[in-house]
Length: 349
Image (cartoon, rainbow, N blue to C red; front, top):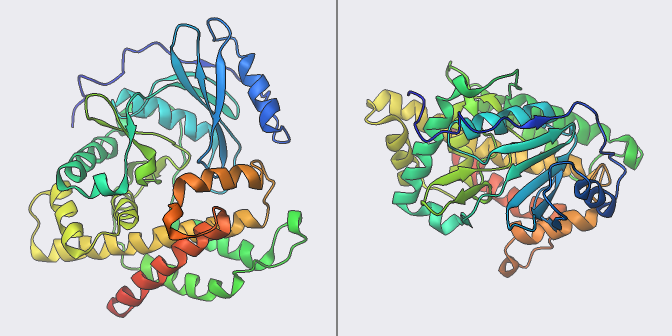
């Protein structure tokens, strides 16, 4: 693929500061006060915190002119590296797939606000929208030319094994007590090690690595824009596809439709391998989400407070499910999905 004519390659360069000012110990109010003092605002801005992320604080900022921005504040945690977040955000905008980065300093970034609506699971299940998202995803995967600086390489199997070690050993913040879900670790490790073996050799691509529908915005031109680059880096392109399909609970027919949209016509042997890989990544997406939340519980005050996380969970856990809006609630939501996929899939390995 060539450089898309609609990409933001000629956009103004972001202001990049090297001095670290944000502190992990800050309260939301202290973080908001720092944002208000950033040197980029034209007039006194209105600032409102938006809840939803597990690892970062997000604020929406409105200048007196009406110009809107999203400010993200976070720290290296789990698989997230802040320098990679900045570079992936810049690259995604060049590709026409994400908002423009305006300003960044260590642990803080400001992007232009994406006008439009947030994607919903039901909308993403619609064949026309699913095909459009996959086309945008392919542009991302072939867009390594837009990356300016070194970014992370991410392999979900290594990440999950690291999380599992922590679940058994515990963390300082909670007295090195094993996780309440430590009994799941042997099954997670067995699944992880077996699933890794079905992945064929591949060429690493520029990947988002958190392709849940809530990280997709539909702009006024009905184009999907990808937001939240906490997991961005080089990786396996089928991870993005598999994770997205996991969140919409795709069956075999939808998986094959998605692969056809991504690759075009495939011979039976290649199609079977791709289906196997997507199914493996669907499973790994449930394990990654569950184990990441389990590790988070072991250090609940690392950055976000449990109260902030609970507010964010209200946006991720539908109230009709009757599940507590918390990390434990999200784990409760994901574990049955893992068990269902694993029971269906493990005999194929």
